[in-house]
Length: 182
Image (tube, rainbow, N blue to C red; front, side, top):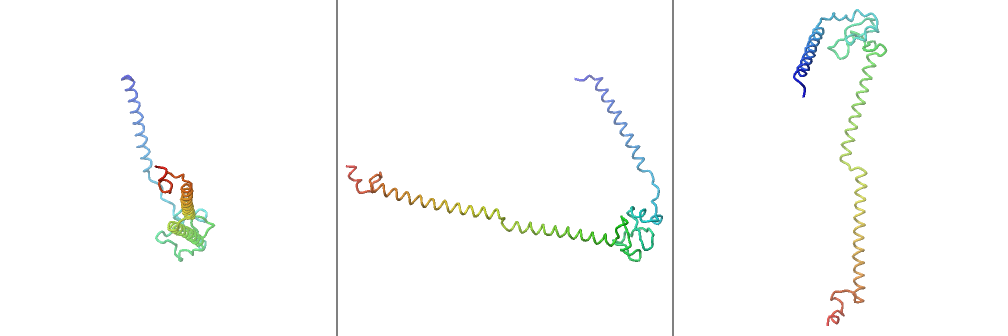
């Protein structure tokens, strides 16, 4: 069992670490709240390579200027810049091709989901090939078992007939049984 002195030393060490952690966390929070410089306006960028890395900016090759992306519109209006000349995100892909490719990708994904859902619904309604084969083999086994049972009954009847004929049966059905008991 630890002594009281060792326990007190461990407790004081823990308190020192806790105090240091609180000081560091308060200091780091103070640094996070510092004011930042105002963002650079899009119009200050003079070429496509410096304009498009900023998500809020749109480069237009027709006018060779960088403008703020109109966030109120999904697509930039034609008066701002034609879609074939607008660049956003990367300079080598025009906005029109970006929209078409994104629409095709979304359409393919939606079509794949629809096909998967239809296949899942159809497969649940229709028994699988394995289930049909299992059903057929079970039916075949039952037929074989019934035929074997019928053959067994016929064989037993023939054997009983032969036993009766030669007096090997222990029952009183055969004609000589009354003489044996006298």
